[in-house]
Image (cartoon, rainbow, N blue to C red; front, side, top):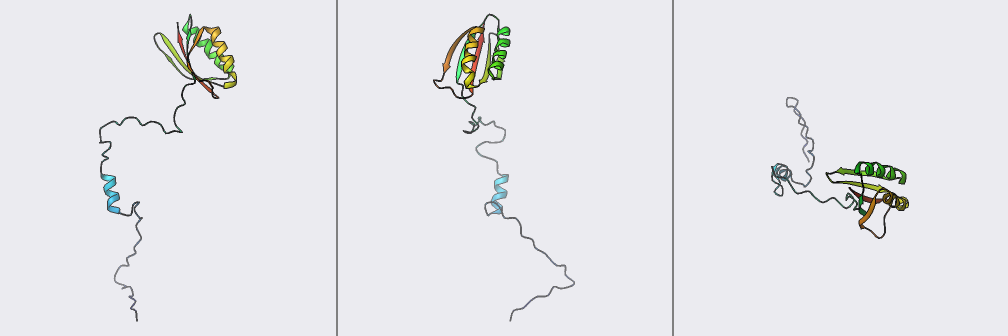
Length: 145
């Protein structure tokens, strides 16, 4: 015969709730892992930048060229108008002492007209390019006087 204990009315009843299970099955290891410093990157050091994940990688440039012009400021204005006409967008612009570097995205179907327009602004020389251009085409124009 089994014995069932009845609660004592003078004693407070104790209710136990199950504690959440640790991730790896051992609570002591979880606490130690959280408190232990990382050995691969000690506190106070700067880690080298990680290369981006394949899906996050910045697309490589498709066309890089130099555009020799008489006036960089005028050429920047003309290039902005040409990009707008071609349906492209300026990604970045860096104006240096002697050269302005403009990165842009141009839809592939309008790249031919865009490149033709560059020759009207100044002397356009392609320094690097792919044989087959994707859509959109990522272009870097180095403006120099």
